[in-house]
Length: 70
Image 1 (cartoon, rainbow, N blue to C red):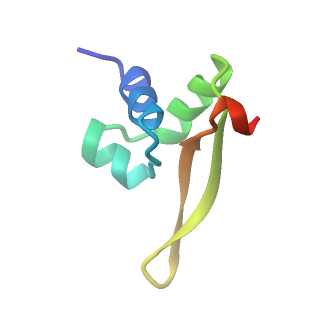
Image 2: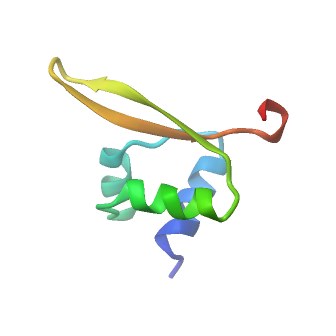
C-alpha cells in the first residue's frame, strides 16, 4: 500500500488541488497539513490558500507548483 505522502503527491502531480476534506475522503488522511509539511521538506514546491467552505468556514487548499512557475 502506498504511503499517504506518495498518494497525495501523485494526486497533486496530476494537476489537482486538495483540501483536508478531500484528503480525508480520498486517502483517509486526517493530518493533511503534516503530510504537506513532509512533502515540502522533501523538496516539493506546494502553495496554499484559504478557501470558503459554506458561509462561515475556511479551509486550506494545496496545489503543486510547476517547475516553470518557480
